[in-house]
Length: 317
Image (cartoon, rainbow, N blue to C red; front, top):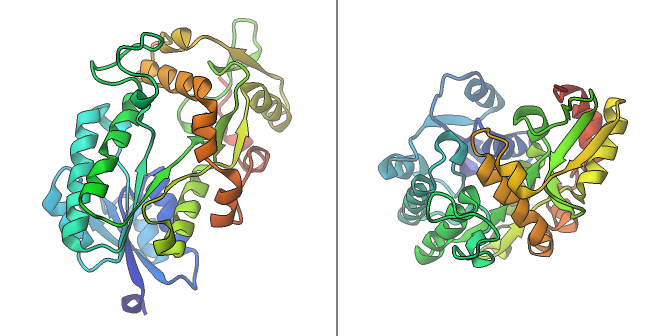
């Protein structure tokens, strides 16, 4: 049965994005696709869980092009994603993307999804001092490197859909982005977004939307598809959080500069990211189309639906 299905090689299969893609395919018993899940540790609990769901689990190292190529053998397509927050190195991401594109070409893949983001320097050049330049060459390093790497897939002639995710609401649970108690004991959601709307999505819906792209196939090759569950202001998110957790959450709108100085690893990068979302709201949100995301994934959740399932998991510090 598996041999008749088209194999999708999913990189980062135990992470938020790749795991979502793998599960979306595996949970569809009538799928035309099979999953080859790539992970660094085939013995992890998440890897074993995917194997139990029917995935072929293989080890590969995205810093070794030959390893990527071997993982792609005999496959129809692949979901490629890089892991900036593991190492904070844009150069490493660029090298990995180049290896992925070349390996995909050599393996003759028919459809690749490359998980990318905007190269913000197209809108905020390095000499634009509204936003500090980071690591000497970037404005938003975890965006810019991915966007810069897009051309590798085009240059290699790989049939690629350029896939842009949104802010994961799951960051409120795992990434410390949720409401925090202020000195007055009240809960505050801190974001430098003024009254602008930001695209957000449930992490699992990213995978389901990507699966929807694979199902559409050739018609989405060469296109840039952004996905979102809803576009919301900080004020709207705080109001919905208040309702879901049964405690008042106030929106603490600070400047991007204040956010950059919060002092946690990557604060400067994220401060610049929020500033980009704020200052280029239309650029970001017009690509991240909620209506089309719902066509790709009919079960798409909005923020309130996500909160109804996850609000109790948000740590309130």
